[in-house]
Length: 322
Ligand SMILES: Nc1nc2c(ncn2[C@@H]2O[C@H](COP(=O)(O)OP(=O)(O)OP(=O)(O)O)[C@@H](O)[C@H]2O)c(=O)[nH]1
Image 1 (cartoon, rainbow, N blue to C red):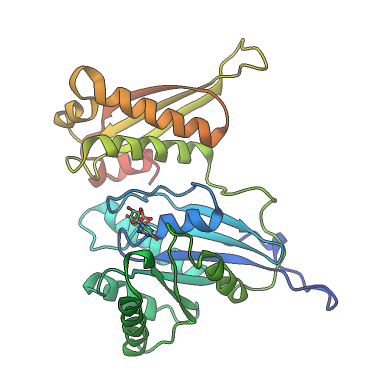
Image 2 (cartoon, rainbow, N blue to C red; image 1 turned 60 degrees about the vertical axis):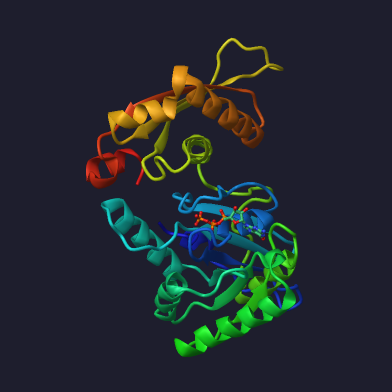
């Protein structure tokens, strides 16, 4: 994945009389559940990344774009870095490292309400190896702690940087849910971006292809239905998105055909549920979200298919978009 614009869009020298405009890329890293997706959404002001109270749901790199008069900040949301157990795990880690080396600033998210643990240290050590990119520590979920606990966390994070031999460019406490200091975080990230023109048209919130966003919404809804039974065994591929023909102009309908892949036939019953009840709920829930995202009524045709052991099979992974 390349997060750099083509050379033809490279920043030009700005006129000395003009106010400086900056543009560039930031990514949030951190343990699963650290609050990266919620923060991305809060900064962009709309649901673009997929949030969930279950770990490891952000599989695709979703970009949110923050438009400001003085800057354009493109947020790249990566999956969590973790000990790879499968081929998919290894590929995800490669995607994460490549992204880190390419962005202009990295935001390391640490929840205010959890002590710094081995998982945080693992990521921080990896960050220490990426010398050139400025690193901002973002203390998330500050609404869950009192000021004493927050102060202790700030000191611990400062210490962590020192131990690993680097200085944080900033340490910023935020609450995405409580809308506290989210704006300040944007204000602190912007000066770390290079001078440059806007990279994306005004109004674009993300350049993730619509089909990928739609697939993520379906996958998120499908995971809601099955709790802990199949956390990582679901992949969704949108096969087709086409406006229904012969509809009056004021009553459009978008036909979406999507396949929900599981790894084993035994998982089919869990996803579909008794008399198809679960799958129906997944369809209803995701359709509502897709309609909100695309701004048009949708007919969603959802099928469950078995792709045997897809996480371990390179050919299947490619087909499923990894
Ligand atoms: N109270 C509180 N909860 C938050 C805040 N930010 C995120 N959360 C919750 O923390 C959980 C995880 O948030 P996510 O944004 O999905 O975390 P993530 O780091 O993107 O997680 P992965 O996609 O698993 O890597 C969700 O239940 C959020 O609602 C916050 O500012 N305050």
